[in-house]
Amino acid sequence: MIVRIWSSWLVHQTSEPFDIVPKGVVKLHLNAPDEGFMEFIPNFDVIVLSSGHWFAKQSVYILNNEIVGGQLWWPDKSRPKKINNIEAFGISVETILGAIVTHPNYTGVTIVRSYSPDHYEGGAWNTGGSCTGKVKPALDTEVVENGFTNIMHEKQVTGFNRAIVTKTNRSKLKLMDITEAFGYRHDGHPGPYRSPDPNKITKRGPDGKPPPQDCLHWCMPGPVDTWNEMVLEIIRREFEGSNRLGS
Image 1 (cartoon, helix red, strand yellow):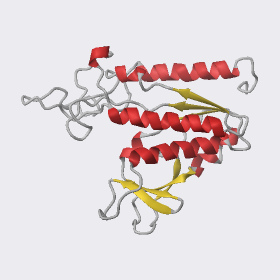
Image 2 (image 1 turned 90 degrees about the horizontal axis):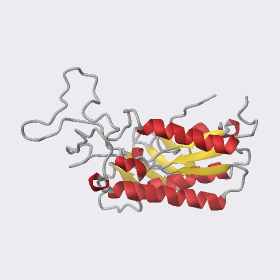
Image 3 (image 1 turned 180 degrees about the vertical axis):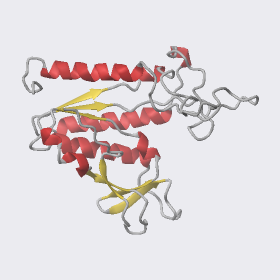
Image 4 (image 1 turned 180 degrees about the horizontal axis):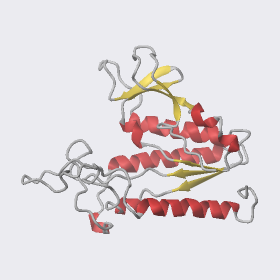
């Protein structure tokens, strides 16, 4: 049986009021794993985790019951943030992986899929970034360096390595590192075809401005199919000759 559990940040979240933060604003308790799926993990043979991009969305960071930072919400500019969204992501990775590898009743395989690169060129998703016209994988000379992707990947790998050291149960932890390789796949996004509107604009205007587009999600054949094959290969190597997945 395959179960899909939505957990945007992989840590405990609430929209209830906290200190000066009103109801409706998402609060992330960075040192507490998401109980929404932690209660189920003893029943899983394989867990595949991926996260990161939601740390660009509005949220407030709470650590040890103290507000330490926020993304797109920080009304008191005179009050310095202790952490930013990148650091919050790093803490969240350590929290969830630490909880999994020390859970006394979990013995499965946890596959951490690394941070997924986006391919907005000439701007961000909301400032005119584009992947229009990308119809084949990039050459070495066409790959655009993305500092944000690189540091998010670094935080994730650091959290993974620390979890390996702190592991106390009989589970296994595997890193499925797709970040660098799929930096070449700028052709795998829906781009200007993100909308089902038959009258959507798919080409640049007379001024060269690109239409609204999605250069983050993977919807085209190729990249995500490869991810599935990689996951299945990891599972095959871990369970081949075992009866654990037989039922």
